[in-house]
Image (cartoon, rainbow over all chains, first blue to last red; front, side, top):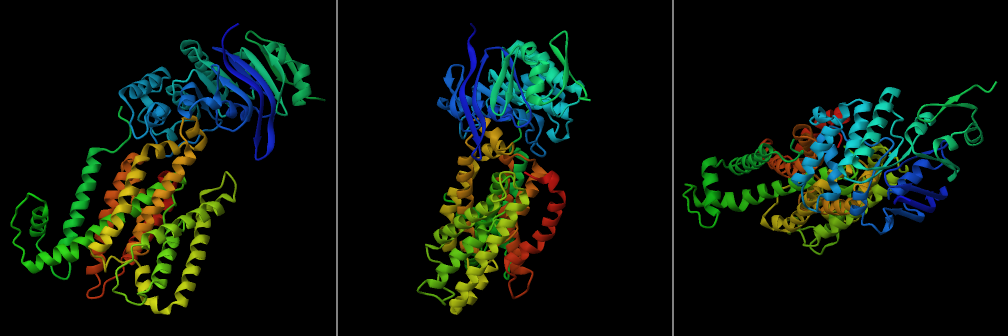
Amino acid sequence: MTEQAIVVAGLRVRLEKALIVDGVDLEVGAGEWVTIIGPNGAGKSTALRAIGGLLPYEGRIELNGVPVDKLHRRERAKAVATVGQSPIVPPAMQVFDYVLLGRTPYVPPLGRESAVDLATVDEVLGELDLGRFAGRRLDTLSGGERQRVFLARALAQGARILLLDEPTSALDIGHQQEVLELVDRLRAERELTVLATMHDLTTAGEYADRIALFSCGRVVAAGPPREVLTEANLAKYYRVRVRVIEGDHGPLVVPVRVT
Amino acid sequence: MRPAGLRPAWLAGGVLAVLVALIAGLAFGSVALPPAGVALELLDQIPGVRLRSGLSDREVAILLELRLPRVVLGLLVGGMLALAGAAYQGVFRNPLADPHLLGVAAGAGLGVTAVIAFRSTAGDATAELPIGVPMAAFAGALIAVALTWLLGAAGGRDRSPATLILAGVAVSSFLAACQTYVLQRHVDTLREVYSWLLGRLSTAGWHDVLLVLPYAAVTGAIVLSQRRELDVLTVGDEEATGLGLHPQRSRYLLIIAASLGTAAAVSVSGLIGFVGIIVPHTMRLLAGPSYRSILPLSVLFGGAFLALADLLARTAGGQAEIPIGVVTAFFGAPFFIVVLRTSRTAAP
């Protein structure tokens, strides 16, 4: 059995006293890509934010075998990087400076970025084909370009665990594919572990090694895409009629009209 | 590529602005002094330097005892207000945040009014400010910013920039009402408080400079030490947490430091508006959005701006001095409207 990068047991998360995540167990092996799917309000994003250390929680979350609440916040930031659903774009900030913020956990208090930090940013920008954007203002880039910059910031953090909350929801299908292929390439090259949430079920199935289906704050089905993305599961938890067709990289989920 | 930060050219520009304001502020006034003589006399004051300025004893006395403390106070107060404004704008991620719009200045004002009204020498307009004045102003300022924050938070997590400013306006009005009540009960201090309220550097002596200096040093050190944190905070609390920061801790620290600076400035100079909003926004537009350049440049240009505004206040009106708060508001209000119209790009 491979080493587990993320272990979640009995996770409960409350937002404004409402119980959003209600007893989630989840394991993600090192180097694995797991995608969380589920209808709106199922607790996908909330669970992801708790795993990234961004929300208080009950239960157990371990990153690389260490409980996340035992990690100093700077150590945690070196272990896990989160790209939120729609990150705030600071007005007038240059792409280079934005990506450099990813080096924050390595900059000592009252200190400044080292040559290593600057070199890391240059390297990441080059790897994501963003070099020519370095001096551009982030708020002038297109949605697809911004998403690559958000990824670059997360990579600059040097964390081996990448949490992606709806990484493609703002993109057209061409850019969706581009970004997900990029994530998959980086995962292989940098031996990253990816835990993502996604709405598009076909895309989710094509890129993930395993899928966890959330409903009402619980995991109701988990396993390889073929076992989770079934007509019966989707009818039960999404209240939707779909046809599931066998594809080259996983099941293709096609909605069909009820009557 | 180099990261955004303080460019040497801008730093040099800021230092130059301070020197120009210093020499101009010292040379011009009811008695004109030769700027070159002023510069030489200043250099002569540096231990180990001996220079002949050619100024008479009377001119030297005007320079060192009357004008220098006033100009230095202007530099300190302007720098403090601009620095506090920049810090508030970053902490609240709100381009309109400013010591006045947040009610901080009104809170500090109430604190000072209370001390002036209740002290034993009440009515003696020539008496020096008591040592406790900055602390009273600080207490008032902290209460005000806490009230504004709580009221502004009533809109929930996703409150808009307007909510906070509305809360600030409400808190300002409330505190101004309290202040008016205190004044009505102590009519003998009305004139003294009123002249102070409009903003003044006019009774400044070295006493006021020494009173405000320690607070300015503490505020400057704390706020400037947090300049990188302020840049990280621009991406939002959640992202900042993900990057290993403790956003709430940085925020409290900065609010306390900025309020301390505001309180010290208000306690010696009264309510001088708009410096805290004009200067940081100008720096943001000219030198870029990083707080690493906005903060130090705000101190330098804020100080220079206020020292020059004070020069205008005491020379433009002939015999009668114009309150400095009137001068800054006269230039600040139109600028504020321009900032509002462009705040999509000028926001922190």
